[in-house]
Amino acid sequence: MSTTYEPTQKTQVRRRPDRGNYDRAVVHKIIDKALVAHVAFVENGEPRVLPTTIVRIDEDVYIHGSPNNNLLSAIAAGAPACIEMTLVDSIVAGRSGFGCSMDYRSVVIYGRAEQVTEPAEKERIIDALVQDIIPGHIVRRPKRKELAATLVLRFPLIEVSAKIRDAGNIDVEEDYDLDLWAGVIPLGVAAGPGKGCPRLKPGIETPGYALNYKR
Amino acid sequence: MSTTYEPTQKTQVRRRPDRGNYDRAVVHKIIDKALVAHVAFVENGEPRVLPTTIVRIDEDVYIHGSPNNNLLSAIAAGAPACIEMTLVDSIVAGRSGFGCSMDYRSVVIYGRAEQVTEPAEKERIIDALVQDIIPGHIVRRPKRKELAATLVLRFPLIEVSAKIRDAGNIDVEEDYDLDLWAGVIPLGVAAGPGKGCPRLKPGIETPGYALNYKR
Image (cartoon, rainbow over all chains, first blue to last red; front, side):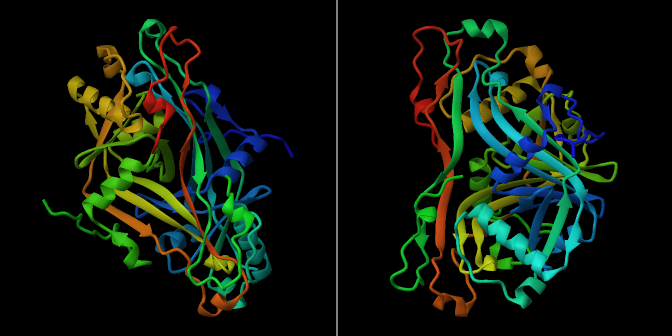
């Protein structure tokens, strides 16, 4: 398998080609770090977006939810989808409004959903999602009826691209002489210490993965 | 003006109606806190998504960019758009995989872009965006040609809804007896201290708004 995705008509980054990236490892890292994916599709000719959790296993990503969710059902029916994730790495404070920007990493995936129907496969995907979001967290095994009542959708990573800006300040040349502050403000995900459920059984301590969560 | 948006066919939250919210003040707060908006539209019958910064002024939101950006141009041409923003407030670590979730606040806006053409109006919007993202930051005034070379799009807040989950743990009743940890991990935006541009003029100190950035 090639280490890169093949650019297509839709994934070819045109506006700033130097920001386009098709490296599988780079794309995987962005998907794995994102907490929310934005899944767009077309319904009655109009765009809709569903924000949802996502998990990647090798060269597939998976979303899931209730079959009673109209948006998810429309995606499950096989409509073309566009899945986007963006990580903001820093705010770029420029010397002009047009010099203000963000350093970011985004991924876009095009494809159609394939339904996962096999219960053991669904269980493996839900397990992977739990470990993706909360590494180390222990849960009880899913019940057959829970798996049956959950729609799990697979999108193979085929038509995929990343777009990355990590340039920091880019100002108009003459602006560098201005007596104005400019720079970058690094951003990330802050997590507070995990707080136990009010109905936690007595004697169960908050585990380290929840006290010192990092993403 | 009513304090709420009128639900429509598209914005009526069906799956979990208790999570739907049409209060203007609630919607405004989510938009104002989000750093990135996800703008979906339809091109040749297929969905596309553009992640971008956004700013709200009263009952309008604005996005901007280069007229050379194909995606933005398609949106500017007046195609129906769906703008979505999501804030993840906490990870909910449940007692089962299906009890794992997130507390979040999301907004969806439907509408068509109106182009802002008046230079003074564009300047006001770019200024508002800079102050939205980096409150207190001082920039030089935009040049006429910069304003002319920037596409600024307005979306009036008409067909809008928020969806909010702030329930914490919701497990299957019998699961509360399990000897498993469950709880919530609060999330937010972490900012490191601002770092001056390598080409900063000597003697310019990093201002407080960049050293102690909060969002």
